[in-house]
Length: 340
Image: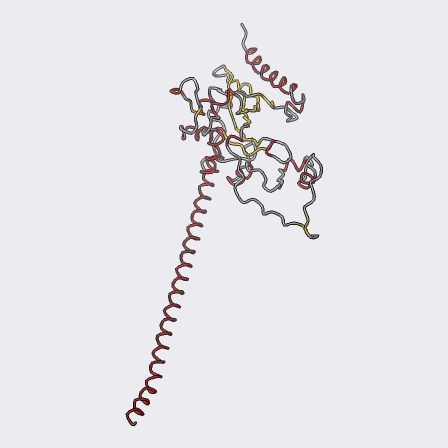
């Protein structure tokens, strides 16, 4: 009996000791877990800080490259082969429209080798400085250029300053597009249905959809070399009217021809003028422009009113006849400089 009592008392005395040991083990585990969580949180914060620092460094490097490109482009002459002003006896500024869908222009618009694709990729790489207009006095960022070649998503309409001055409004464009007022939103139980979320994917036009270029040139008679030169100053990418909610053509960006000339020479495999008669004699796009291996028609000749030919003579057939007449007048002027 005494033996049993002693064993019972010993068992009771041992119970608190086991409980304290368990508590210590649990406390140690909790402490270890807390430390692990704290270490993981610290590591995550350090990783986020490193990523943010890397992003800031990338942005700073990109900004520095953009500034260098802008400074270099601003100081460059827009002409690839400028003629000294003292040698210029006659000069006339001419604007031409190049439709890359024409058969004669197909060599610089072959699938995968489109000239517009090369220009867009050069802007993305930071090799080419875009400008707002062919005056080349207001540079724009690469993001502004990419936005210009991306049609408005979800029915939104973004108007330029020229369109706003002409009286266009975004509300009017949405209210009536020429086919009557849009249908009212569907209702369910007296409440308007949920509006679908706007698109988040890129809406950038493909290279084969940017098929219109506008070329600005100075027609110069060089008195030292006694011949007429077509000195290209700028090339502009225009967004076709069918991709605009208002149905008008928009200027995406203009580029100095001297900058384009360098890009064409730096990327000979992409800047390809395809010679469909001889695969061994493909040309570089820089040489194609120098040799005038493209088709175009005149849309504007410098005048006191700064008016286009279709604004003076009318569009359609009259505009084309006026363009042909303007081209023939330049040719006759050159021939008339000589006497026999």
